[in-house]
Image 1 (cartoon, rainbow over the protein chains, first blue to last red):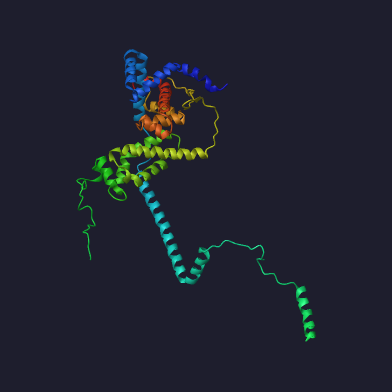
Image 2: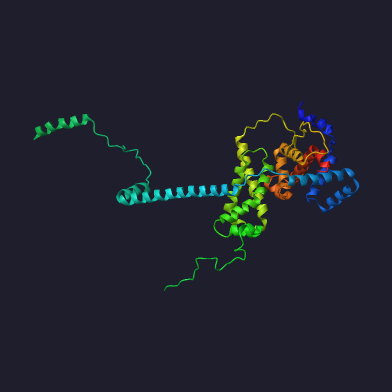
Length: 167
Length: 221
C-alpha cells in the first residue's frame, strides 16, 4: 500500500479536518476571493459565509496571516557586492566580444590581403568553383582513350613488307 | 551644392533633464530608471543604484522559487545582466518591478527546464496525482509541538521548510501569486496551464501551508 494514502491519518492527528469536495470548493472560492479573482456573485457568496460561518472566518484570518508572513519572511541576500560583480561580469563579456570581433576582423583583413596578392590564383579558383558542370559520361565512347592492342600493331607491321613488295 | 545640417555633439544641451543635477542615490525610482535608459548602455552608477534598490526583490523571488538551489546568486547575476541589456526596451518605467519579476521568473523557468533535462527522473515515492498536478498530501513527520511563545524566527523557519516541501508546481504558482503579486491570468500564461488549474493550485498550496502552520497562524505572532 502506498504510504501516501495514510496521509489522512496524519491530517487528523494534526487537528486538521479532512476536507470533502464541498469544503474544498469553498476553500478554493475563499482563496480566490482573497486574490480578488471572483465574480460579483461569488464575492457576494463569500461575504455571506464570512458574516455567518465562524470556521470560514477563522480560515480567512489564517490565510491573511499566511500571506502577510510570506511577504515579510526574511530572505538571504545575494550579497552587498552584487552591483560590482554584475558590472565586472558585463565588462568581461564585452571584452570577450571585442577580442572575438577584433580577431575576426584581423582574420578577414589577412584573407583579403592574401587574395589581393594572388589575383590569378583567386580568379581561376573562383572560375573553377563558380561554374560547376554536371558529370556526363557517354555510354558509346570510353571515358578514357584506350590504347590499341599490340596485336593490331603487329598486323600493321606485317602489312608494310607486303606493300614494299608490291612496289 | 553643399548643404549641411547643424548638429550638436552633445544632446545634454538640448534636453536638460530637471533631475540631471540630482545625485543618483537621491533620485526617485522612476527617474533612476529613466537615467538608466538615457543612453545606449545604462549609466553604470545609475544601474548599480537600481540594482541595490531592487536586489532584495530579485533575491526574494529566486529564493522562493528555488529554495534548494545553491547557485541562486549566479542566477541573480544573470537576471541583472538581462536587465542591463534590455532596460532600454522597457516602455513604461512605472512597470519596472513587474518587468523585473518577469525576467527573474522566466530565467528561473529556463534554468528549471535545463536542469530537468539533465536530472534523472528518479522518484523514491509515487506522489498522488491530482487533475491539476502532483501533490503529496502527506504531512511531514516533524516533532514540533505548539508553543504559545514561539519565536518569530522559528515560525519563519517552519514557513520556509513548508514552502520548500511543496511540490514544485504548487510552490511556483503560490510564489507567483503571493511574492510577485501576479494575476491568475498572468500566472496561467507563464506556467502554461488553464485559469482553473491556477486557481486550484493556489488554493491547494495555501491549504497545505495553512494545515502545516496552523498552530502558528492562530497565534499572536
